[in-house]
Image (cartoon, rainbow, N blue to C red; front, side, top):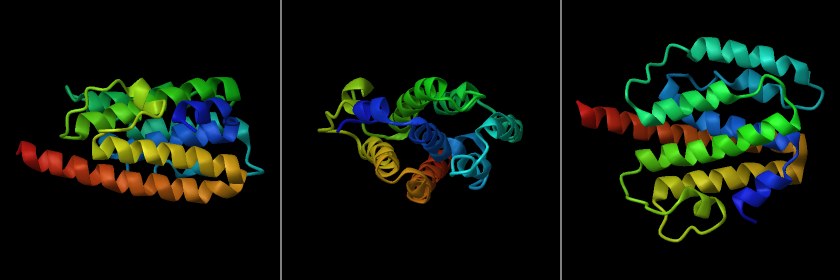
Length: 184
């Protein structure tokens, strides 16, 4: 099933986790540490107060507002993902955000991948993956995995979704670090 189809069929928790996972993998661009989004992940568990999502989101925004975008398009895209997160964790708002985060995260990975990829992201998200640069292909696989795990396991899949996101964050942190060293 394509990423577009998975997003279309996801429930509210799957959508929130999908958008949050995309943002989580891009946190290194915003200067955030590995634990910055933990409270939001915790808010997706069974029995959590969905109404607390907005307050937790504002706390995260406050901690990450110092990231300097400069003229870096990847940082600007990550910042927009954070700013676009809806204050209310409802399926309608989260669906739009999760879809936008998917596109933004793939674009960020494309910008950071030295390989040239002229294919439109929409075709990649629809399943046409031949010739994809490795960084973008890995991000697409992570997005699909997060949605599949949550569709198959509900709240029980959150731990695996977080593991997938953590792996992607480490990869992106390494890419950002190499990129910074290359600019010096």
